[in-house]
Length: 268
Image 1 (cartoon, helix red, strand yellow):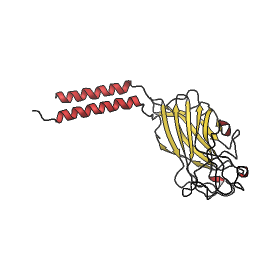
Image 2 (cartoon, helix red, strand yellow):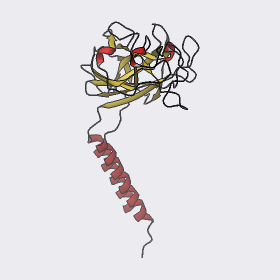
Image 3 (cartoon, helix red, strand yellow):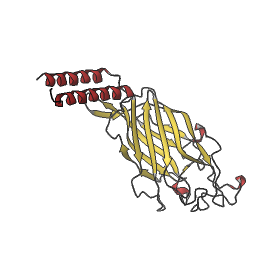
Image 4 (spheres, one colour):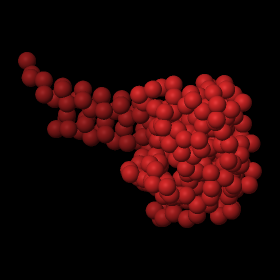
């Protein structure tokens, strides 16, 4: 009986510690194109977006996963998403009506030449190459194609040929330039090579605000969109525990394990 009481007390103490531990102001979600996605020309496309919140900052990381693209239609040009506010009391969500601005952005510039070779990473780009559209009712679009974006340049290109890390062997003239030098780049160069990260400041943002739908756009013309699917942390309002919370939980579990071992120890 005494050992059972001790275990109950330990569980109660652990629950109290977790209740009063500081909550994490962070929500991390991942979206991706469904398997087998194609652009309007029938070529494969693949991309991912990782979205996190910290305070009033929304961080979006875009990656074009389609290696060795053939045409500019496979290049990632926009990421649209909607934000919703989760009510922990009622368990319901409603559109989050904030407005935001791009604070910072980073990514590598890349040019593919006519001989299928490409430049190395000379440096990062600034946010002026992409723009942010939002209507004030929770609908956003990070875009290269919209007004203020760099279209037809600065779309996000995937990695080179897996069998030849120094060339885009399948690239046609919509990606390459006519020659092999820096002055021979094509109409759509330079590209961005990912991951490409944007930080967006949105007043009133919190861990209760999450992305509840999204889409990717590909190519250099509007309208070639692929609806994204959530692949990580898809539950509304789900937060990522802070290290302090994890430590408290771990300490409690270790303590309970110790009590269990003592209970099973034979008496002398």
